[in-house]
Length: 246
Image (cartoon, rainbow, N blue to C red):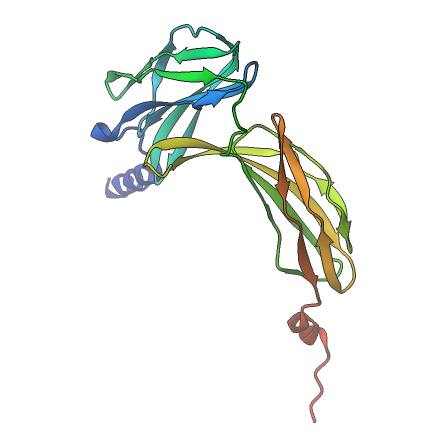
């Protein structure tokens, strides 16, 4: 009986917490402005709980393209995300209605918000891109480089010019989501896209990867180029060398 009790405690200790009691919150995240005819996300975020029976009334001056639900687990706490993809109509205002969801024995209601539709809107500054590479590789070594895009939609990448290495393969884009807080402490959904290339290093020297760009929506975002050292691992070479006693 004691062994069974210990096992149950271990298993439940590893499981995410599905409700956070008084820490539960239900908020809606929208962009301030969008272009006429453009697509954008509306995220309803149920923090620290698993939600059921999500309900939302109709939306005017925008067309629902599709919707889906998702969740994230952070520090063992389960949060639910309900995403609506909308296509904006003509210039004006979109009223994003409040939604309801059932969690932790009660019905939670979000606030309603407004989104302006304007033709002079600047491009979304929340999109960021970066390139991650190893500092050093060995001649002939197979390794990965990853273009990472924060927010936006799946992008098209202009293939960079690569010297002293060849591209062996390319992975399908990998999409994840995470909850982050902005400078005002407001919780938001951050979309993360990863584009992975598998390379094979050439001769000793340096691999040069030129600058390139990722296009998401109607805008291109530049990614700086970089260089990677190509040099043999001397410790491995020493281990392979025969040892002679003097």
